[in-house]
Length: 256
Image (cartoon, rainbow, N blue to C red):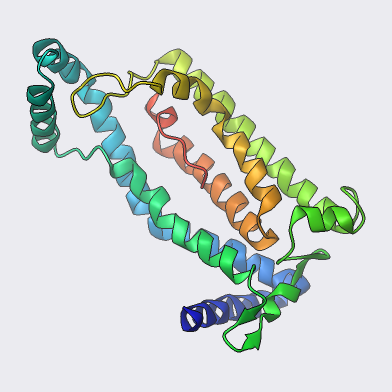
């Protein structure tokens, strides 16, 4: 693990060195943003596939409703019929989860890198790198202890909170419009019956993006930059990929 972290630290350092002529003391922060963009670009084909899968699943809703009427009293037969339908249409119920799952290792790598005081046998020099005076290894409570919310470090977090709030508000309004225009059909389990609690989850879903504010407040600044960049990318990406689907884009919420 230490060898892997050393290689990852070297990658971040190399990106920072390449960006130093443009960003000077903020080059490491810029490297994290670039790294995040590269991760999202690598995952983008899966996001496109997930969008196609969501569109296909939406088109299947009338047929699923028919199967529910036909086999509603026989859960085993209903499950078999659903599996056959998805196999026939080449639709995977789990395709929408893959982009989020594949991004998690990158986030945890950054989190671990900027939470560790040592990498292998050497001190972690990346912890001393800053973004406008705020250490990339520090957290919001550290900024509050050095000048308060409107101090030099606090203003960095305030800017991140503003970006996250703006993206969350965009997602909230878009999701509410989508659900109002074309309500999403209730999620069903393998037997085709509605999943208990999903009605409440659907009502809560438009607010999910605001929970990112908590994440940004408690993780190291480097990881917060990843979250803010990835969340912004997600908002733009979903707006484009689901522009011709009034409700499908609201059906799945992703924090990153």
